[in-house]
Image (cartoon, rainbow, N blue to C red; front, side, top):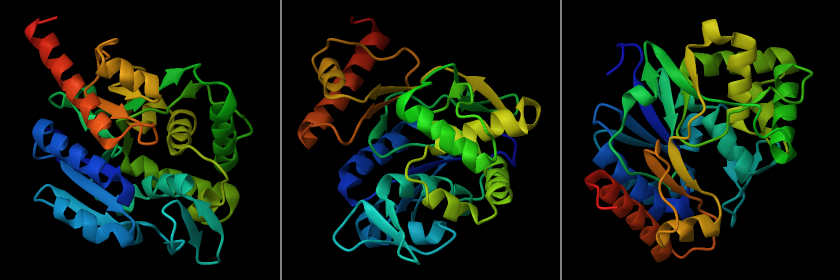
Length: 296
């Protein structure tokens, strides 16, 4: 697969409300991803028993308490609000970023591939799309998303990295994002040196943040291309339905799959019933089959 010290593992952060979606993801991993690529699920402690049956020979189920470098707990009665040991409130969105930024504590693999639980693989896993000639893919789209919320994410990354710029020249947000463990450890150390406090404290005190922009900006502009172990790729390897109309267009055959897509994402917060979500994935699988056999 890769050099012996360049093992790849898939990492999924999930929680109770996404259990059925996560089951679908796991089934697709087992169908389309080679068995020597491990899969790690990270869930809140309160959800461990519900996710435990998903553990297999290739899949481990961990809790956020196993992974995070400090104590955080969910607010009773809420799936989307956490507090640190001093009672500082942390939104679920920021906590998800914090868990991904702690991925080096979840596995000793050098190569990480993040697969969200509202995603499903549709095609056989193409390792060369992610790893070639000793370099790992970095999803990077030059001069993209230079406004709005993305601009705020860049600005926050700049503050954490000790850099004055408020836009780093590229967008790094997407699905099936890949990181290097060694770069992540270096990022954590760099943040601590820049802000003078533990990296997880600085990240958790962010009102909004993008872990992908933080990592991408660090490896491109601080480590640099010759040192970061990545090749840059602007293609989207996942067909994404971020809005209701995109899912419905796919369901009713009004659009086709992205040509490079290995997977499909149906955003979990869309106004779709579980049966409708399943129907969208089934339609995508049928469309993929028809394209492969020339039926369309």
